[in-house]
Image (tube, rainbow over all chains, first blue to last red; front, side):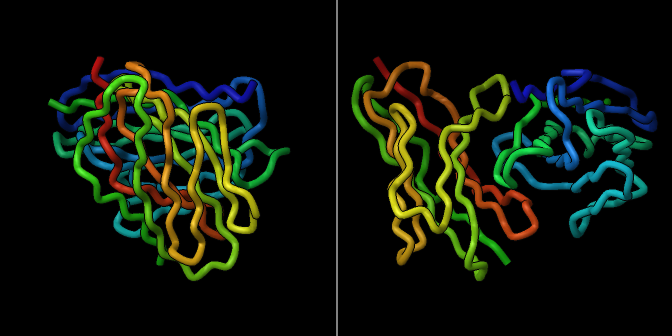
Length: 117
Length: 113
């Protein structure tokens, strides 16, 4: 149990287009999901915390108008990279916190590799 | 502010040997959690082991053990009997009071036969 999926796993897009990444908890309800960004050979950086039914909380330095987050249900959060540019190319990973388990239970998705040409 | 420090350079480990990965942390929260994750080249984050700040005993999970020294603020990971499949990046992370995870920069481990 506690499986998190991400779609797509890999996306290549042209500069100026918008890209939507989905994060789904497949067999549990997730009241909170987290979005991370990882550049090559670097660590994961938290971008935002997504709570079901409310606005996301963004980390300092993350543009909320650039990275739109929607957590419409207890099993789905989406990250939309608007007007993507080459510097947005990165590995985006989500994690989900199980609603009925302790705060330390976070389950990670397999990640989405975004390449902006 | 929280800080996780992993300073070791990339490491080569002989198969079947043990390896220790260093992690130090800094926090003002009295309650916190420490994690180790493995990230192979495919990119997924694989949970390995967890240590709560109030846990009296060091955590163990199979070949993984966490050497938790609270006074020194260190949480080193020990992998015993290394296997070729252990080759990966290893990240130390800490959970803050608002359940957010802060990650260290990671350690690259290569297991050689």
